[in-house]
Structure formats: structure tokens, C-alpha cells
View 1 (cartoon, rainbow, N blue to C red):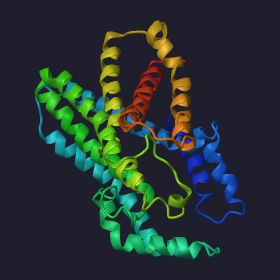
View 2: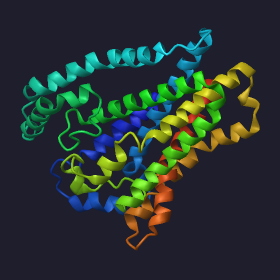
View 3: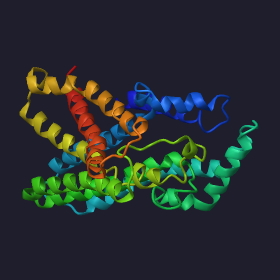
View 4: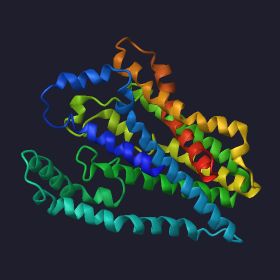
Length: 321
């Protein structure tokens, strides 16, 4: 599942850079925004949500294993978990930041390389600290060092939130359903509110003019695509999937013989494809759209991808398919 997601991410970023560099026929690229089938690629950035679902799932599974090995509540686990994760991620991350700030510019010498590498070097020398504190998805977004590092920041922040929720549920077991319900509800509402307040479209529109500058100055990118509060829904979906997996494993259920789950399993791919293709309405339709319904769509679309990811993870864990 990680491999397939990474494969899609690489394809998407390869196509994305077609608009960053000079092209002979820009009209051909722009016409792709009005083709129904190309929405799978243009709106394909949604697949990154799969990673958040996987992260949330693994957090729940690991936490439940630790919890069941302990007889009493240990507050120290909260600090240990965050510290270990920081130590595991940061050394290699810091090395890459240092490399981009110093030696990257000497790796190549193409006609556009100096422009790209010099900009990266300047940003990394000024804003390296935002990466090491994992706040680069909120701070200096317009001058990013290792721009793709926004994912690490968002994932790290969601890890802290996820551990916090698990600690509360461990300390107060009766609050589990209420706490998860409130958290999931809030995670669904936030993208809709941000979309409605800023009068955004229901999907992240990848405009050619925004791609020219790597999305640095695009409001949708800064306020919807990379912030933690608009990506929390899929992470929470993964967490819930992890908790369900733990319960199902204890009951020794055979999901391969569960008709309802089998139907849900085989609905993943067509539903995911429909979600990606649904962006066509926002790209090709120029008429006024009802802001309220757009906000509802924005709230459901991204988070539903997390639900699909959760079903796929549980099914894979139990050998379905």
C-alpha cells in the first residue's frame, strides 16, 4: 500500500514539474484541465491522504500493544513517544537540510539548475529552524526549505495530537467513544469552514500560474493543502481503523467471510476513482456554485479518502482480497 501510494506521488510530481519549466505548447497543458479523464492525475494529490491514514493506524496499533503490556497508566509514555519519534526522524532530515543549504547547488549545472538550487539554498539558510521544529507547514510557507517536508511537519503534529487522544482514552476509558466522535466531527467541519470562509473551490485547484512558483504563494495550498487542521480527518480515520483492527483481532473474526466487509473492500477502487474524477466539476464548470454545498463537499471529499484507506488497511491486515 505504501509502494502504490509512493508510485502515485512520484507520477503526480513528475507531471507537476511540466508546468514549472518552460514548455513549447502551454495550450496543451491547459486543455488537460478541461478533460474528464485527466482529473485522476490533476486531482491525484489527494492520494497523499493515504499516508496520514497509515500513520494514524500504526500509532493506534503500537499504542494499544504498549497499553496492554502495562498494568497502570504511565504519563511518561507521552513524552517518550514524542521524543523517540523526533530522534528517529530528525538526524537524517537535518542532514538533508544541511546538504540543501550548502552542497546541492554544486550537484548539477543545467540552464535552470542555478535558479532552482540557489533559491533552495537561500531558503534553507534562512528557515532551516522551521523544519527542525516541524512547523514549516505554518511558518514561512512562502519560503520553504525542502518544500515536501511539509508532510513531515503535518504528520509530526498529528502524531502529538494522536498520542494525546490515546493518553486521554487510556486514563479515562469511558470517554473513548465521545472523544473520538467529537474529534472526528471537528476534523470534518474544519475543512468545510476554511473553504466557506475563504470562498475556495471544493478541491485544491492546481493552477499553472501557481505551479510556476512551486505553489509558494497559493492561498489554497497554504490554507487547505498543507495545514494540520485541514488534514486531521484522514489521520483520525487511520487511528479509528487501528482501534477496530485491535478489537477484531481479539475476537478472531474472519473478515474474508464477512459479506458486508467484502462489499466495502471491492468498493474502494471505484469510489476512490469517482472522488478523483469529481474534481472535473470545479475545473470545467465556470458557473456560480453554491458556497454552502461546496463547503460540505470539501469537508467530505478529503476525509472520505481516509475512510477508504482505513478499510483497505484493515482488509490487507486480515488478508482480504
